[in-house]
Image (cartoon, rainbow, N blue to C red; front, side, top):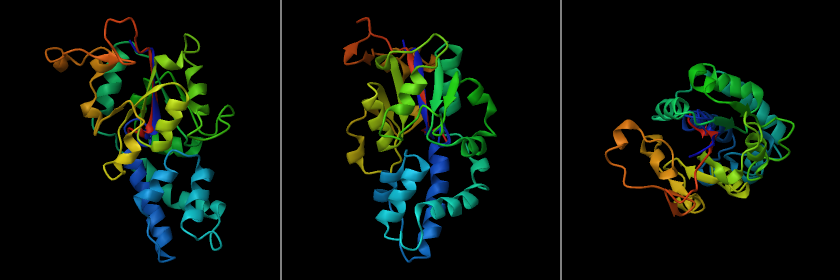
Length: 264
């Protein structure tokens, strides 16, 4: 069974359950900024920015759009911050997020959040969802001293894996939920398994390295990962897998790392 589960910011309102919801705010604001320069914001650029630390994503934004001579990365972040401050508190949970979190919590599965968001943004995104985040053992943010590099570096995941109450967890026993290509790469670089819940507008070429791809958290079957089944799945379960082996082989998932982009 999974000992820990990690969720990136994108899944939950940019983190568990919020990711897609908060990601739309980033898109909206960035479209407004680019419109001043008669440029458009598309998903090929968004895919390069998702999951990175703010300053890293900002540099990609101004360089790829060719506006760096008019607006540098720091100025872009300052302007974007002002616009996002009023949007983040309206974040809603993704369908299936609270159901999954409650189920895992009730079954004693340790969970945590690893998100590239800094303290201020994380507080704004999660202020209406205290119940869900109270079920997380810990949260590791992008401005944590241990996180030297953003995704696709595994820094934030490896830091989160060390902070469970029982002590460091073997990365191979952690399941990560992600929506960003760089987050999937970070999980694989950390030696963890990853379920990707991508935005439907993301090119499918970015799905290839994930261990599983689902269109919604409502489609996640815990039994496939050696986790306790939802009650309505018990009669339908036909066997699961872990690391390419059938259940009963002795391999169990022992943790969840939630990378928030997926739940908001």
